[in-house]
Image 1 (cartoon, one colour):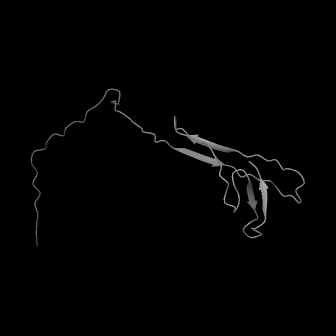
Image 2: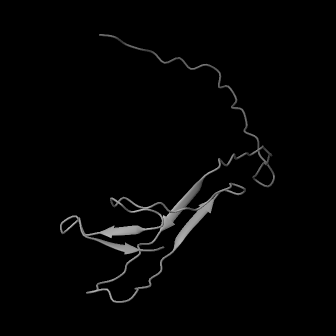
Image 3: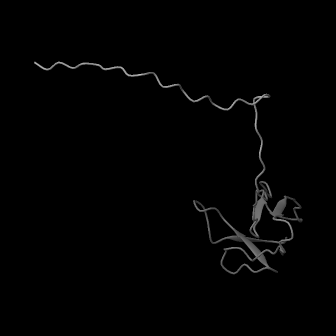
Length: 109
């Protein structure tokens, strides 16, 4: 059987923490931020609606927004899209993926 004895020596005083009269302390430090040249682009869908035989032009509108970091130069341009044969000046819209994808309708932006 083991026995242990606790020996107490003189009690050492504890150090007192700093106390501020108003409860706060302030300092200053440098803060920096480097903004890289960058842009974000958002576009809402352009919907020509549901139509039968197209006898006249159908005019619709949508919005495209560009937001860039300050002083970032930018240009906005539109390409011909991804329909075979479509170009910037002669755009083509094709049927849906589940329907007739080879029939196209010309449109302009």
